[in-house]
Amino acid sequence: MKKKHKKNRGDRENAAREILLAVDNQLHSPDMPEVKATYERMLSLGYDDEDARKLIGSALACEIFLILAENQEFDRDRYRATLDMLPELPE
Image (cartoon, rainbow, N blue to C red; front, top):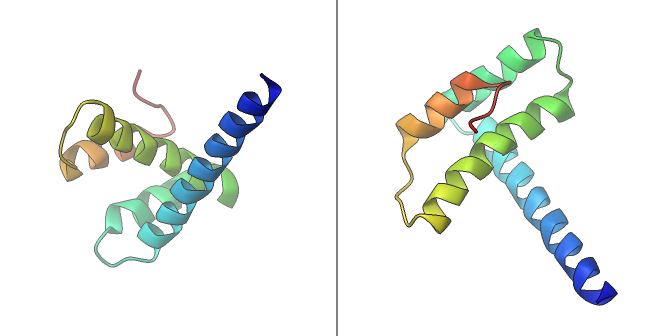
């Protein structure tokens, strides 16, 4: 049983790393200015770099969940709305 727990934790850690990598890519992409604006807003609210990126990652994870679990398409307006809610997250 412990092996399964370690594997699940490893899977979560890998997923978190991949989401943060995607956030970094979005921060540097001219196609996603809303991500950079959200990052700068989080910094202005007093969040440090890591926490700002994790908050954005949480918004991205919400979007990924909807895509995978509910078989929905990526919805940029919905993603933008979630980013606009930060630091609050949807329930």
